[in-house]
Length: 248
Length: 248
DNA sequence: CAGCAAGATTAGCGTAGTCTAATGACCGTC
DNA sequence: GACGGTCATTAGACTACGCTAATCTTGCTG
Ligand SMILES: [Mn+2]
Ligand SMILES: [Mn+2]
Ligand SMILES: [Mn+2]
Ligand SMILES: [Mn+2]
Image 1 (cartoon, rainbow over the protein chains, first blue to last red):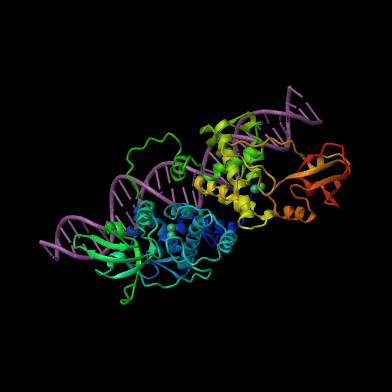
Image 2 (cartoon, each protein chain N blue to C red):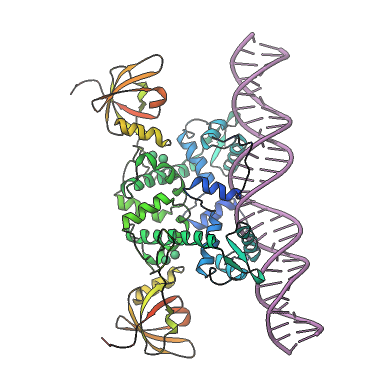
């Protein structure tokens, strides 16, 4: 039924109110969630993120980003710093982490329950994350036994928004001869991920950097095999340094 | 990236093109899918459906419905009959059935895999049906072993849009003393469904109408128990008539 | 068959989100 | 310390949907 809402004093913006009515708790529009999520991924809770960076990442024009940032600021989900840069507020961060949580749980579900390939699951999660209710999400999580990581090694925030703090470095940042364990893979480009998968460059596998040329060519060993890649090829592979010592 | 699309000759409406780019095959906007789905449910592929009926069912104002019907007609998904009534075209029907298929598969999934209560899954499916890609849907279907019916007894169309033809009648249409089997339950109102569930009025159960008063009070027997309900209370329960004969 | 009421449509707005083109602000460099 | 280029914002449009209020149409019904 459509309600004959004659009165109605909008305290929060219509879009947010509508979303809140639909979901259990307040749920934002798809765009807002995406902006917040990307801001969080770009560490906008610790440093201010430039408009242009955000716009490129979201594949929107700079004016669109400016526009949406103005709304989000009006809604107190972020603050503007010098040159228009954005910094998440506490509530902005909270909503962002919730979105990240949904995304990662969905990716995990698509792989573990539906059997899809982890190199190809990001896009679907990107859409579904805006459609799952808290109820469905909880059921998903229960069915999977409360996983701690998504298929790309990214930690899944718990219901309270807590994330483990990890000390990871890009594979390319290792010194020659240094050993490490692959922990997280940038998951937005299926082709690169499929490539990494073929090379055995997956979360949990041990790597050793053999050589890092000045011209950006990296040689490394993973799972006993020798590989060579350009900086582009391994950008987005995050590893955990192995304390120097035992050579098995 | 945002593409510097200087050219671009829109043959199909932007909304549809955008959706098509996102999904595998052409996928419509959420509104369009909902309109088509409801039209199909109201048998707009066999008879013309009035604007007002559609508007009420979709909980939008008549002008909104008129507006959307104009678009869908422009896109050749339906034709307008006398008094603005709408009738689905072949392609409109096809897209509608695809939407119905997604909805029913999702409901089944929510119940069978996620363990949610069937009296309460319709709303979630209503949202998710617009977000699942063909790939995810196929995986869902595979995991469940290609179910033929949703939790409310509604047949699930196959990939070709085929549906079994059933001869069902409302429970209230039975004659006094007549036996039947519950086949499909109207699934849009959780409270009524929860009630039916408590009474054992679920797909597959045998019923016998005991008495149908002129004043709209129905007495019936289901699973050995006697129940009484008003017409409102059993509206939406569709049964299959039992051929007269053996009284087990 | 005139007239009325139900039902459909038009007119005019509003929000959400996006775009391009033009303009404004800033920062580092020479 | 003026100047040029990068980056952000403003200005103006557009699509997709909604809504209300006003107007048309039409099918009865008396
Ligand atoms: Mn992802
Ligand atoms: Mn991931
Ligand atoms: Mn349903
Ligand atoms: Mn159903």
